[in-house]
Amino acid sequence: MENTNDTTGINFILLGLLNYTQTHIFFFSVVLMTFLTSLMSNIFMIMLIRMDSQLCTPMYFLLSQLSLMDVMLVLTVVPKMVGNYLMHIRSISSAGCGAQIFLFVTLEGGECFLLAAMAYDRYVAICHPLRYPILMNQKLCLHMTAGSWLLGGVDGLMQASVTLSFPYCHSREINHFFCEAPSLVRLACTDTMIFEFFMYICCVLMLLIPVSFILASYSLILITVLRMHSAAARKKAFATCSSHLAEVGFFYGIIIFIYMRPKSYRSVAHDKVVSAFYTIFTPVLNPLIYSVRNKEVKGALRKWLEKYFQ
Image (cartoon, rainbow, N blue to C red; front, top):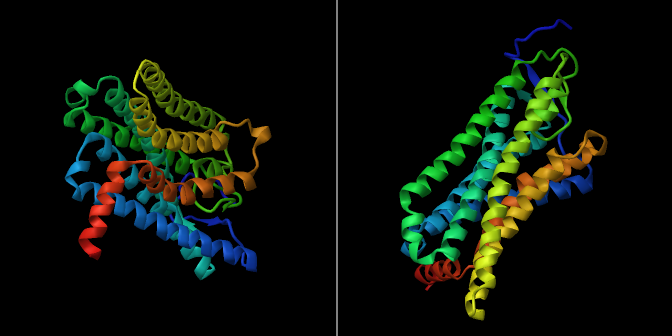
């Protein structure tokens, strides 16, 4: 086939996650139900935060942005996957592929920095409670949120544009259930070593900077908590941080497992399963994690239920 850099009009083939066996049809039903639950629970979380005046604080604004990113993440990946499976179609256009890469990397990168912003919010709330309205004001909160989206967007734009600039002159079968830059780069019929190295360094920085900030924030929080004389105050501080720590553990653990392992330890099958857990199942856990241990969210939910179901 002729070498060309023009990917306009090219269709790629997504090999997908599931086949048409009885077991896989059952898993498809689970994926579909999880997708709908994730979508509804995160949208409900956003609406609850906007409707309840007690939740109009920087902490819950950042949480609403996290839910928005999760909604966009599942909408980026799952509808195309479900549509292809139901219609027995596996093709995706180069434009659609580029859009998936851009949105996925944007949301993934944005969430990295948003979790760091949420760690700073916890640090100020616990270590400097009296100065919280000053140190964590609305302007700073908006700047941190916009910065998270912007940094993720820049990374997504670079990865999508460079990935689609390569000539694809051999198999166009992507062994994944959505367009992911590393999976697509494997199909290029040119040397991509420099780009892969750049992508790896970029991934390291996108993880290292926020993780370092989160670790520093929680180190200071731990020192402050250990100095508290009241057991009730310590319990409240740990309850404030536990939800965020659980989310950080899920998010960064999966990202590191997928992208930071040496190639010799990587398996396409394992990567697809872990990616499915991250893109489909993790978003449904976030509203649950942040509501079970949070009195304010549970209180707002109780008021909403009493208002509409009494």
